Image 1 (cartoon, rainbow, N blue to C red):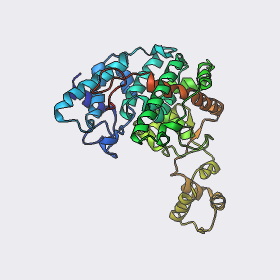
Image 2 (cartoon, rainbow, N blue to C red):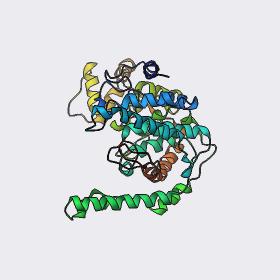
Image 3 (cartoon, one colour):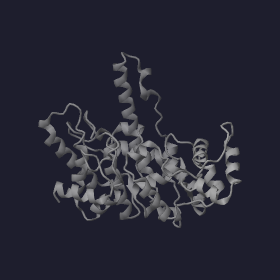
Image 4 (tube, rainbow, N blue to C red):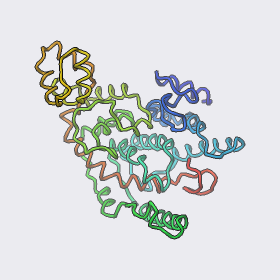
Length: 378
């Protein structure tokens, strides 16, 4: 498949309009951010199954060429393209079983699609363990009962990396290593890795089967709404607005309306029918704005409970008019216990994913020979 044919196919993959500089990127952000237009994981998985390596290379290059490495002259662009295409080939054909054991081929396809999407978030090296890429790839892979091994090797490499960074910073800060970010960086310990080895997957887990049936970024969307991702409040699985997501999720490419419908159709989320539930999920400011639009008298001094009680006291037609435009979803009640169990599973597996994506991928770097070396991240 030619580059032009790939771009045409990707354009037809979604009804959304992309950025003028690259149809696969969101028009709402600068190309330098590499915010994908939509969730391309189904397209990538389809190409992996059909062994269409060139199409995936074209997709990755279409995005990466919009942001060449800083200072790279035009004369070196062909070398940069060759490097990007080789990295895609490397990720697709790499033997991942040095550290991972897959339950089936579907899990391996999901992982390969996930790490390809992760290329746009900075690639894979020692710095990755301090970024959010491992968080999101771990969420994508919760759908599969994977097993891990040889994490001790990864931990040893991580310790070496941290020691090297501290030594580098000591020189940069003229002997004051205490100013190094890495001096206080907490690596996983052996007990945490042992916990990831000992994970007990339940073969009858309904949630896992439902997750396997939805696109990768919709899996992130689902768990982000629960609040278990980094820098969010502790998960309580309460009713939420499905578009209220952590900004980092958008980088992976998400059509929020389409993803919400996917989660609803899968039975992972439901639409609440209780007016009380909907009102409790809406901010005071939004409710006051709606009251004003519906010409319902209110006082600025009212707290949210007072506003809710006033709305509930209105006649049914007016009450429905007030709440109808609010898009609220809640987690399927029959799956709440499994959601809570998966939150614990995520926290258990995350240390391994941080180590593995940082030191187990060994992605070649542009400008240097050998894995995970060089000054320019892919």
